Length: 287
Ligand SMILES: NC(=O)c1ccc[n+]([C@@H]2O[C@H](COP(=O)([O-])OP(=O)(O)OC[C@H]3O[C@@H](n4cnc5c(N)ncnc54)[C@H](OP(=O)(O)O)[C@@H]3O)[C@@H](O)[C@H]2O)c1
Image (tube, rainbow, N blue to C red; front, side):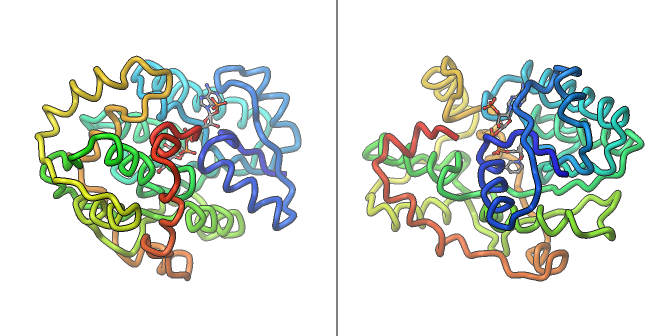
């Protein structure tokens, strides 16, 4: 039996759908990460945990510490107690406990906890994901729609990235379940196309039919503006974690998925039709 944390999130929903289609037994953890008794009850008879729960979308460092770091500590403690065989954790490229960026630092800290937990694990470090309910392409398209006549390219839009389609990531997660050679390994996954942020924006404008003037403010200038416009929301569409991505390139070997999982990831241009939805729905995604 597999237990999925964070099953209601962007990745979790896609993973649950595929697990159901493939008829694999899996259950969801719907309690809070810091509830040891709730975790213990749900971990009964569980063989593998796929850990996706995260407060990243809330954009608050305090929550990141509470949910991601301390919540994972609880999960690891209870998994050991309930003799779970393996934990699969979805991390991010550039995760590093010494990073200056809070999200990458928290992900690095969680990875460190997992490696020292005594449990068998696999860590998948993923690039930013795109797909129907993403908070990436939808967000950029939504912002472009609403910031007429401009489209914002923080830092000149030069930062490099290799977005991965969420369904390809799910394919990697599912394959990992059946891969004993990935026990106690950390694996990087990313798309095969390496873009500059400006190239991604150009593709989005082409798909949505928007015509915009490029505006390239410094990331430093964008931060207070984003905090003022969105910081008060419970789930701000633009978080400071999102803005950090304009200063840290998010790259991996371009053949990472092909080499580790034996398939060619979907090209971004093949899976962008969902961006043709009304702009408001794109900016304020439920996921
Ligand atoms: N999306 C990406 O581009 C990407 C790329 C690389 C890595 N990742 C990582 O992959 C994981 C999943 O990402 P995602 O995009 O699916 O995130 P998401 O859409 O924000 O989903 C987060 C999930 O965590 C749950 N959660 C939040 N706080 C919780 C708490 N206190 N206790 C229990 N559950 C809690 C949420 O449930 P509620 O809504 O009920 O709170 C939701 O199911 C995250 O660790 C993320 O950092 C994501």
